[in-house]
Picture 1 (cartoon, one colour):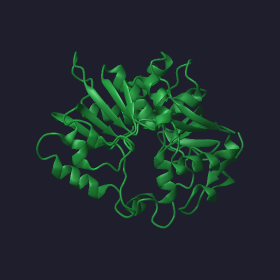
Picture 2: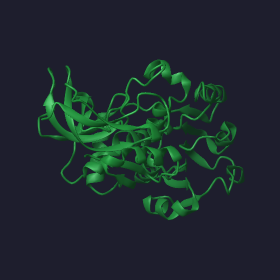
Picture 3: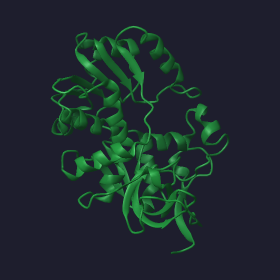
Picture 4: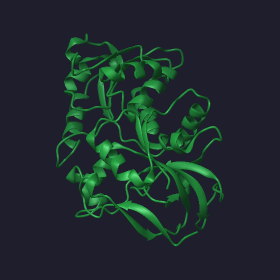
Length: 331
């Protein structure tokens, strides 16, 4: 194995146009870590926010004046090529998938805590597997937080706002699998896709406002798009229902914090509004891989870019018009 590797880097905060392909040292796995030969990297809205350093509130954690992790990409599938001390449950040559700490996926190699990795079933492609850790895991945790499908024999009506993105397409499929009647808000051109994924009704909330919907229509509202008035979202659910805020939208400085505080105040009674702070959940990732292997969940991939065009992949995501996921294949 070479001592150096190719990686897409940006040493300062800013748009995707500033990403450059560089040769850097191959990382050495530390205690509890493995080294992966990257096979595919899926990109998320979070990658764009960390690339831009937006909101400013995140910079004390991810780098005050420049990013601590100049290589983007947090969802990665790959092959284990080396293991650090005290690694249990990962073997050299094994194909695995997981969520990285901060980034690093747009490179030939990356080191990952072994505890975050799950083996990829033979029937699941590296590209499909890479879509699951964050996007699929977030959708799963959002439905759990809303209580969708947790009580056996119950049928819920669920509204997914912003259903055509990475998290949204998984949310629609998983909610339908849990027996829910799924309504999806999306652009009109994406309606046929969402219906194939399990939505019984689709509409565009920009053309058919949420205010046109009757009150107490849903058991749960999963807001992936953001920007909706909280009281309007709250009005749509039954008294025992929940609104789950997946997006971290907000201002340039404080980001989602003011909206989260308003949500906490509005949730003092019934119809709770619950911001989601999704976490790496390897046990959930394993279940998602099983569903994909069985054909019950299908990762929607808008476009798979070659490694040489990784900056263009980030630029597409930055533009905000992606349907499903954007994936970058290994060099």
